[in-house]
Length: 244
Image 1: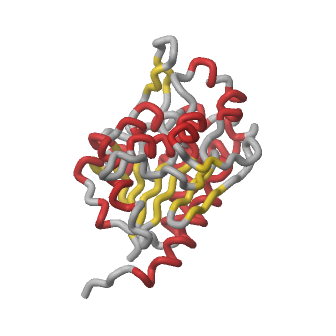
Image 2: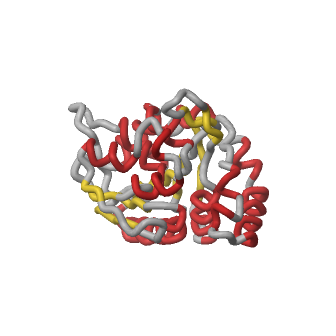
């Protein structure tokens, strides 16, 4: 069975430029939509967070306001997360994860990853193991790409230098009203690190595939990114060694 590691943020606060702490977590749609797609496809999923801390949803992501005024969608997301609350309450410890046991990794966003995954060595360890192996798939969504920032190779070079990717854009961050007090902006950091950064229109679904790397821009990209991951996993299934 194809297996996928899902790395979620364990952060509940995002440190702001002025020293304040903004409530945060993972973004509901960015976990719920891919989780549904992967589960329905029969993918074996393991959810892990730094320290095995409970994965907490950003409550803002469950409001109608954050879902284009769609109260029904917000209610459906809340209900979906309620159905997997035990999984979210007791994830695996990222520190204990053996990345070689998985066919790929998927990292949802929300501002939580800006706080913890952006500086997490175990997230970097997973990425260092999986990205160079073209039989594996590395995928991330929105702010999840913050986890890429500390991933260097054995020579200290950024692992993702020159790779085509997207993420939540500086334009979108500005439109949320959060850019001014953010300690840094993800799009800016990825470009400065050497990514071949490709932004799509703000708030529209936008997914980039570069070899075994799949990145989605924003919450609207969640379902498309997950479907793309399925295609990439299927394309590589024949190249993986089988066990008796």
